[in-house]
Image (cartoon, rainbow, N blue to C red; front, side, top):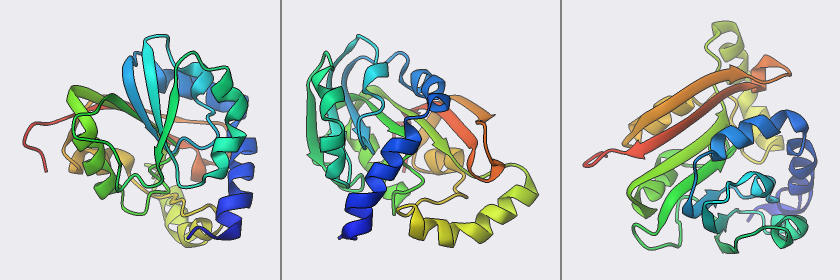
Length: 209
């Protein structure tokens, strides 16, 4: 149960904040090169939809807050490919094995309760050679900032729908059995405590855990 705040208030706040122009270049970088059938975890209000490349034929959308579907209605109507909502939890993706050509996560792994389990599910639904495209905020390499991230994460989780400030995204992806084809770390504008980005593309390693 997400509760009234998590299901009704937070999605509207996130839709407003994440629609900022500063996010757009990072969304475009993340989605570049995608084609075929794609799953997006943390679909939210569909802010990525205008930036998907023309090679995408279909998008499966997954998000725990169903209000996002209503907030995304206009973006879905303008989308050149079909969008199908398939579930609520990244830890239990309701798709068959090897169902999609790629999986996308933008500012989502920070909130997933069990990211290792979610990444295991992502590996399962990817077709051979399929790729995981992601852009996430996470743990800063600056020790002082990282210490503050550790201190503030328990409070931030309560207000931010479970959002962790201090997850080391590249390590989480590697530990889940992926190989990083590309990784870029950059700072967005804003307080360093929440603006250190991990932008990358990963492919599942055969026989990985």
